[in-house]
Image 1 (cartoon, one colour):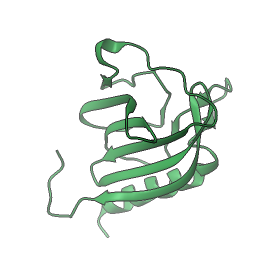
Image 2 (tube, helix red, strand yellow):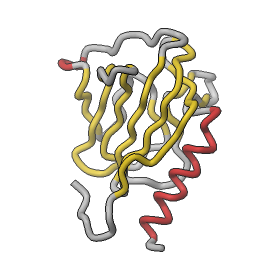
Image 3 (cartoon, helix red, strand yellow):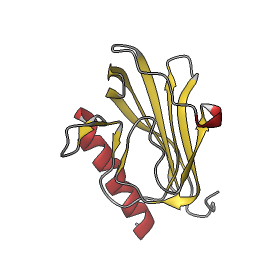
Image 4 (cartoon, helix red, strand yellow):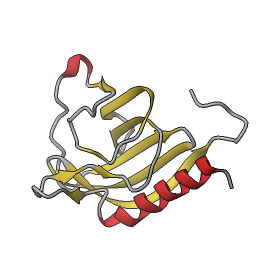
Length: 139
């Protein structure tokens, strides 16, 4: 297993471990949309409604290492794609079904679950939906 595959595996394990916590908390108890364990080259993140309508998405010009993503807060090194014009995303509705897609240099990882508050959600399922081959260069 290559070092990058091993790193991506640690990311996936870390994401699975926070399955009670893609809604995690920092010291100030602010919910986090995504808590990441392990190094990873993240390229983009999006949160969508059940029908696929994107509520909020961010993208990096180059793969970037993050430890967390907070809903509506653009991480350093990223730009907001949706909503356009850097408008804040709408508040999440507790109980609504959502899907998050995390795109990294090794592939795409998806969580599906329900909103638990205006800026957080609880994942109920997690899966790797696309894995890049060793020979395929990252975008």
